[in-house]
Image 1 (cartoon, rainbow, N blue to C red):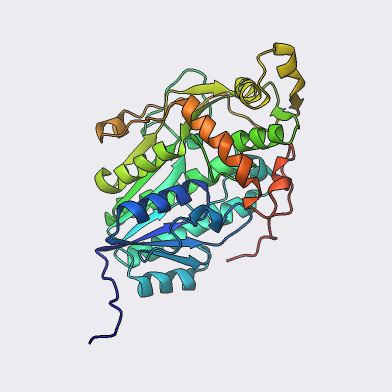
Image 2: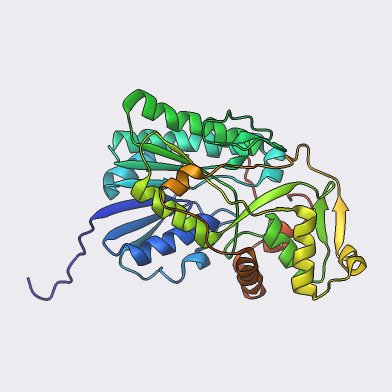
Length: 354
């Protein structure tokens, strides 16, 4: 009939959970732009570290849809799969801040383990064709010399990593028991625009931009591998296309830096100084958290075999990140609270059971 707008017919309907968060928002933007034939559905609860401002470039696109909701509500999730006819799931939604997990271990268990269980059960019932679970290198625990590959044992040392490891077990069991096509990814630390400033890189950048000192936990000798946001997006697009059911993929980088060295790099770039004594002036060593793994060295050969490798050099990535925070620090209602040396416990509601 003439006069009626045509409703677009989509080849696939892809659900991204936690899509207003840091990494997932970059993935959503990329999917919406690169897959015009896919409907990208962003499900997010919009808690303290999420921001719809991360998605302003795609919010009006016809192949993008935002739904506010909670992965921990089984009836809502079941209905979502029924009404939206989901084909593929990319599951990012999680509580992720290690420091907070020590004070809110039950909350992390509830969201990360129970929520993932609710989601994978509904996806299995709906006969989804691919379920990608986004995990972390922290499930391996720390190591000073041993390089972890996907078959290395899980030895998590904090409540966040433990909850991610437990959730992995639930997801993997659906492959073992039903041959349900799940894929698990474990990535290094990711940095770039859109990251809530409780995490180390945006925290240090924001502190320095406000003429405040970098607060360094313990010795500052803990080393981390840092991967730029667009590189990790490419990794997820590769896993969506090439990742094999039942497999686990490390998404890592060889680029590694100690937290103290990271602070010095940022002081050099933001405060324009190379003097050691001036750098020390901008560094404030605070008490360490209960456990703090020294390193997470990962072997990412399996991802390289799928055709993915990180491309963005540190100097380029960190420059873009610093620029972004100059303009966007207030993208979150409570970004100031994130700059405390230790977590402020208010963002969390009291745990209410399932």
